Length: 347
Image (cartoon, rainbow, N blue to C red; front, side):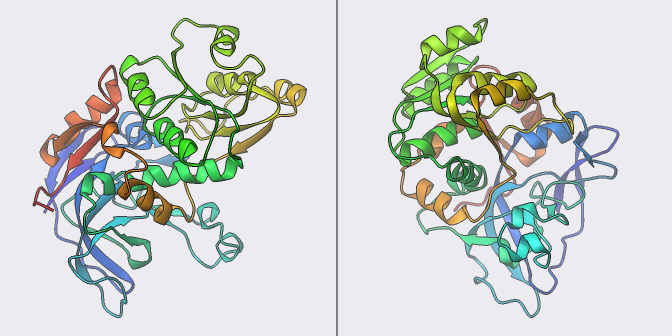
């Protein structure tokens, strides 16, 4: 089978690999579409996120939908041929965190597509049967590949404690920021403001229901406040992953508001303005992956309550995986969610 293999010295190459065999409580899935995530780009460009490092040849890809093609021995799961989205979190299911239901915080966690559990940029991938989520018959694979990032948005909005009518500012109109916007609208938020420096992404934000979509290139924080809510919004979602944007989020939230840190930074530590947070008594809520959100994400996408197709800007065949990564990495107007077609058989 073909696989897009990332090498620790850099470079993504298409290679032939043997088809893996599923073991007990495992299944073999044929990926159809795989979304490129910001974490994939960190591994592709820098070879790491925090202390997760690419030290041996590795296959990326954790946002994916596909078809169950083989079931491992002694495994009870959905039938062969079922269309599924796959939850990539691989907890131990035995520790205190797992027993309390917060499996995304398992200290022994591994993750499909992160070093060194191979992901979906290959024609067949073995995954735990427990991670399968069947898709509705009329849901296409493009929407299925958006289930994982949508689940993160759902988890972030749940953790924010958003109540109907509360106001929101979202910093960053990338795929996660746009999905947070859509989920906030679904949860009954009042005004929802979103900022970015890409006009194309801001246009999508407006189509998804943003109250205001602000191009903040060259703007100072006070100017952004004037364009959103002078008093600050109830909740600010940071969906970029930098010290500067995290501080901006704290400046844009109203006193006693909530700041939800969703963006992922490459480094283990970033500076944090504690005095600013204290002076506002802002509650800072960090988000790590998602939890128990795949079913809701599937319903939101399949029902059309989230118009997921608006986010998909590019599709590349597996043979052009490196070009797909470069397109997503370069960004620019027109690039939002880039997907890779691993197996192009019709739905």
